[in-house]
Image (cartoon, rainbow, N blue to C red; front, side):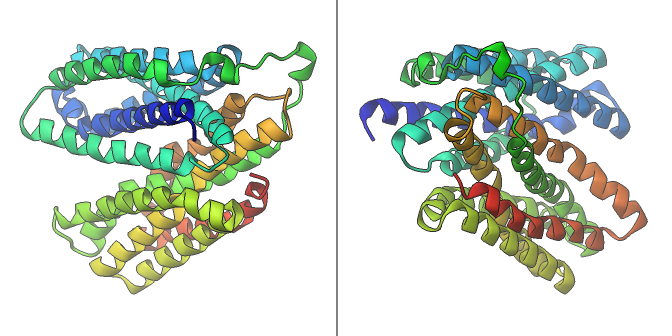
Length: 385
């Protein structure tokens, strides 16, 4: 890999870390947002939907403008915007202000997400080697350490505004340092005639659907693992946090090895094996029961799911470049896959909760095992990537 690509790889890695760190540090302060605004659980749940609304409304324009202007400037400006949105979120003037800033935060976070994945596709293609899974591992690392830092700040009673100011300054400096390291905007600028825009290859919706299966399981596993450990198996408050920690650790391990495994065995076999590992590990752990079994189950679930979304994004970019060149830009393909996939993070946790009201949570989570096995079908669509 030459110097230009090496620099671009570093820049994209930093951007993935920032994106994950923002999400993790935000989630860690949610209890403080609730306390400061003095709102109920229901109002908090409603408020968090504004983040989701921002994410979904950002995906299409993010893909479009990353194609029109190149992903490099979109990464730069979205990172600056992320710093500013994080700062605005820290003020917490009122509930209405909270809703507005949550929407803005979700919008710019998703814009950065699409543009950085689009740039990662170009770096991966030019390098002639798989890199996407490692990039997403860096997102997971950022999420983990962002959550840890947010938790420490909360424990030390550092206000969300003070946290926002410090992180906003870091993000702005990072954006200025990263911009010259990225590939030029011309590297992935795409111009299409109006007559070509009518075609919408269905393959990207299919890739997104399988990404949705993984995202739904990821979201539900993160939100319900601790509840299962505590309410079903009598774990202490500390022990009940371990399933999520184990899951995050497994995601990082799986993503760090995902590119190597996909290169060695092919993306299709890796995704299929991941589905089997996740489905079998989770179902066995739920059937056996007990805290040790749940820890192993959540670890295997994380390992199995870790590679799915990165490889789906990589497949989307590759298919756009090779099979639909001139019809759809890689950034737009990534946005289409993201739009379907990320819906799983929104519907997963409440769907499990709704079903668990009628059935025991332990057996409701078996649905995630079934979705994991469906990932075996996804392997045929990743074979071309």
